[in-house]
Image 1: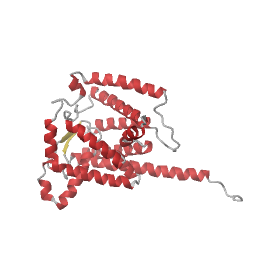
Image 2: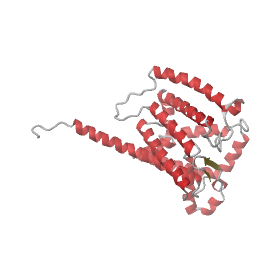
Image 3: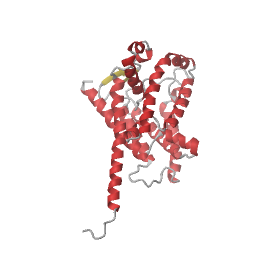
Image 4: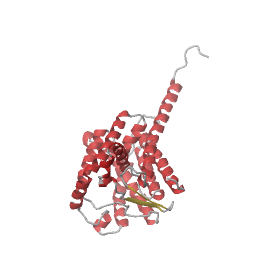
Length: 316
């Protein structure tokens, strides 16, 4: 990392990550909590917030695409759907609930001082690293169970324009969001001072994703860095074994930033590459955002308690 574009890329990731962590911590925004509430408690409030988040992301990304602000679409490394996506999603969902947080949720909670999230992060690194051991087998299964060869988006699958798919989805989801808003189903009552309503968080997070796409060239992503950290640690004790694993020598991720006029490549290996350049600062930023809001919230509570403290009799 040495060029002005490199520094701008890293700084952008850091700032966006900090904003993401702050917003998510302040609103208690967590994917694991959304699905946990549905299946364990039959509560659907956060599912409505998820729908709003998806709708806002669709709208902003499509506007960017139509305005020519996207360097590539579909995004690099988008692949056709396979049966392994379903299996992996199921395992990921189970893991989120057991760990008590999604990937980003684990990071902002760790930044706020949650020790359990630190253990979950260690588990993420170990699991991501172990994947390299059977990547070849998983890739073979994935390649043999492709459901729609050569089609990575719903528009390609249906044979229609991207704008048409997004428009129909926005009309349907927009009607649902309008109904929920009028019924007061998008507002959560909370006695916590400074609590950010999840619907506000959904819109802010969608805006941050759009900002990442414009400046960096790709949406927010951090999971590959867990494999990078794990492979780096593995290399310290089993360098030869690491060299024999094809997964860690590949650099399949390619992206470019038209705004910064820079192109990058990267992969899960331990080397510092394009993936490390954008994902390491993003991870640090998310943890920092959780830490900042936790300090701010603690300061606010102390200040509020000070105002509420009765004046002793006879003072003054």
